[in-house]
Image (cartoon, rainbow, N blue to C red; front, side, top):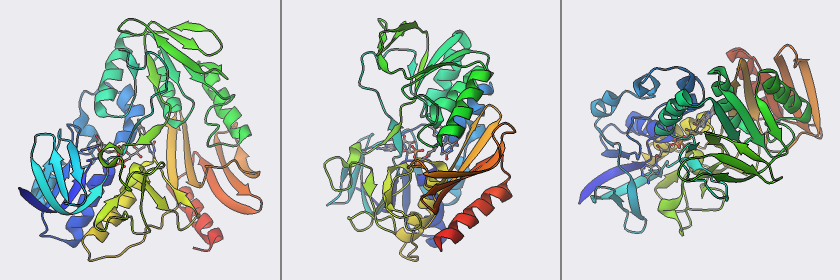
Length: 393
Ligand SMILES: Cc1cc2nc3c(=O)[nH]c(=O)nc-3n(C[C@H](O)[C@H](O)[C@H](O)COP(=O)(O)OP(=O)(O)OC[C@H]3O[C@@H](n4cnc5c(N)ncnc54)[C@H](O)[C@@H]3O)c2cc1C
């Protein structure tokens, strides 16, 4: 049986940065990175943005890590390979090709997968869930043949995809069960402004409408709404949230309802087994409570922390502010802090109309989040510093 000091499961940004940190602190330990996708870790966030709009065929441009880095750092990187079984007690992983691997420490970095609404027709051809490079390539190709598309959802991914497809001159509709787009993250005024911006850019909005099902024999023909409408559609993109990919540890304490629970050091209750990124349900030492983020910076930073901790040469707590960004049309929004609860008060500097503003979100008199529109890197950094200062961290 193959034996390894470190096994990293999942070759997204989280797994990639865990490898980077392990090699920084342990030059000799044997490391295997196993990734189900065919590609070296790539910039997943581009899939809903320039990747769709540009016609460049190849993924190479989107790589986060050069493939040669793994060979140069003596990391056994296996792509197009899934870990199919994990025996936590015996510390043995079984790979898709039947090989077994004994490991000393492991990092779970399996990320998220798209949520599937519980309706008929979710598996029809031309109903796309955008998560992987493969999905992106498929959507890009379909977008060349179809003129109209329905995007289901009104969150970050739905809005980004809708904007990109609209910029590609498609006839785009968005179906969202709430009255405004991005209502989960934004205060009502800002959400109304973003919604108006989509309408102004020619996106048809079906707001307050819920999905009832997709119709078609093998490919999509119509979309049914709960209110009884039937909308003809040749292509649909479903963006209804991302759930943690926990199949591998299902029915173990490593799979909780909100992700894989970890401590301050990103270690699960199984000593030597860590969980990071979209998968991890971690204690937020700055803003309080437990949190699972599904954002790029969080996965990257958690990979660096967990990788360092795995070597035993470091013992670092994960202490980053929640942070993410989004881009749609010519808008760029950066979110610093906690946007999971609607603010009770908003202080706006600048104006929506000029697209350049900062909105401070308060709960009572406590600052919880700073939203920066069209900000510079310096402004984002200063928003992070401001919030840290207010939190006394
Ligand atoms: C289209 C899109 C746009 C986005 N845009 C933004 C953005 O603008 N800003 C932002 O902050 N965030 C954005 N995100 C979110 C961000 O990309 C994710 O938070 C980040 O990629 C998570 O990294 P991860 O390494 O935790 O997981 P993932 O990126 O999901 O990687 C996990 C990897 O593990 C593999 N895997 C799963 N199970 C197994 C197994 N059993 N064996 C082997 N491999 C396995 C998966 O195939 C996958 O390759 C976007 C996401 C998407 C899909």
